[in-house]
Image 1 (tube, rainbow, N blue to C red):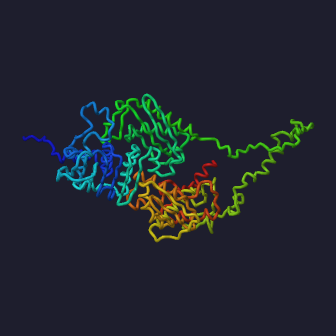
Image 2 (cartoon, rainbow, N blue to C red):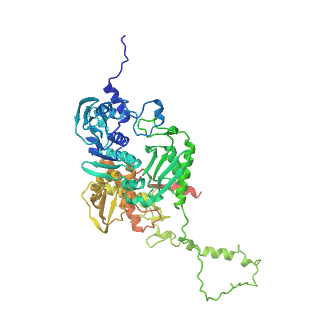
Image 3 (cartoon, one colour):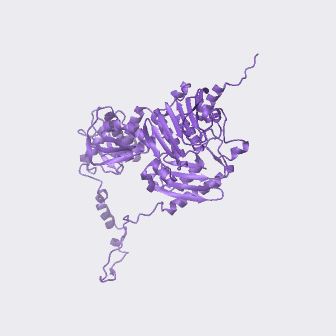
Amino acid sequence: MSDIIRLLPDSVANQIAAGEVIQRPASVVKELIENSVDAGASSIKIIIKDAGKTLVQVIDNGCGMSEKDCRMSFERHATSKIKTADDLFAIRTMGFRGEALASIAAIAQVEMRTKRFEDELGSRIVVEGSEVILQEPISCPQGTNFMVKNIFYNVPARRKFLKADTTEFKNIINEIQRVALANPDIAMILNHNNEDVYNLSSGNHRQRIVQLFGKNINQHLVSVNTDTSMLKISGFIGKPEIARKKGGEQFFFINNRYMRHPYFYNAVVKAYENILPPDMSPSFFLFFEADTSTIDINIHPTKTEIKFEEEQAIYQIIHVTIKEGLGKFNVMASIDFNQNTGFAVPYVKKDTEIRPPEIRVNPDFNPFLKENSPYSTKTHHTAVKHWEKLYEGLKNENTPDIRNESDIEPFSENENYIFSGVEQPQFLQLKGKYILTPVKSGLMIIDQRRAHERILYDNYLSLMQEEKVHSQKSLFPESINFNPDDFEIIKELIPDLKKIGYDIEIIGKNSIMVNGVPANEISGDLKTILDSFLETSQSGAFSTSENKKEQLALVLAKSNAINYGKMLEYEEMTNIFNGLFAGLNPNFTPSGKLIVTIVSINDVETLFK
């Protein structure tokens, strides 16, 4: 039997390695801009076409490479940063394994132009599928110009599983944000499909945060700073006002390298206890500095998972630092002294005569007399006589008086009519939350908010399939700004929002103007509605246009549904009842929560046994 074990060809081995390092266009962007940072660049320009599927181009003014280094950089494990094994424990640069360029060249068509300051000519190299097609001298500016075209062109199965352009571009923006936040002194430009998304000038950390996430965030940032022998922490945490339900702006950096760390994240969240609701997540931008010998960054191919020697001690340092920051800037739950608690001190003029209180005593009162006893029949009867007052405020003019049995109509004998009453059903609202109505089998209980949410959801979906409905012009049009990655998603929603009655136009970079809202409808704040939609989009819960329409309809319905505690007129309860049972699924909300339940006659009778 012949030998069966053999070495893989370099092209196949590189493709396997690429599967670990290069997962999507965003991975290419990450590796290239990190190389630019390591090259000492003060300016980086990123040009993207079709969310990176067609082109990823990164241009920097860094140190550049010689002719030999230009060729060697595409070999596996070729690196300028590691010479001995000890160097692995003192890494300060972003890339060090020498896998990035080899992995990129294995699954794309690559062209690189590079030149050092001291050289008269630079070098141009073309690599496709790990094969060097061309290398020649060329005249070019100092630095490196890297072009990656047609990612996964030779691995069609991988290319087929790339997400929609919106999702892939959002991932690219996430990677750029991480490098940009860690290196605020480097100017960066991001251009997508010939349109500038970012144009970041050099500055400090706070300025870079504002450049990336908008001017509104500046007033909600609280600075933190702690210096210990084990760890140095600096950066900013967000006030509760900018907390989001799902992953907002949350960034950890160690020695200017972005990292994920669930354990340290828990330390931050714990510090916000009793300040934020359990379903809200705070924003933070925290920069750690530690001795490189106390951390291990070489435990994951993407180098985003970092191991620390003293994690428990660092957890406590982070927790205390956040608590101190929140306390120092009074970002804590406080007593509202403007709230009317029912206690008031009367105002007394300076010249007001002060009189002592008069004490009135009945000298003839005898507690042993029967009529003065708290258990006397007379007193008891007086309390029962005025029992009607217990029901004051519960009845409105449209609600049937349940104390008068003659007002309650008998059950209809018509098999096609399930309600009580020959003419119409009878309704009663309970605690501003439930609508009660008798039916043949017992008592129907309807959750008023969930029912309204179901009605609105079905209505919005129906409108999105039809022509545009009328909108009502706003007296004061509202402009709304978004982060660049969020704006890419919002742009896709505008046609559907117009169909349901919103008059919206794009007015500039990452901004929209709301000129009108749906007519004849109390609409919730559109910014809040869109923020809720964006929070859901981060979970990747939907990808197709139909999924997005359904999610948009759900967010709109939840935002505009009547709140618990709202007292309904009889006509409003009737409209909710009729609208609910006109739909195809009156029993459950779009999220699957129960809307209607029936307490049977047998269950009611059991209560009185």
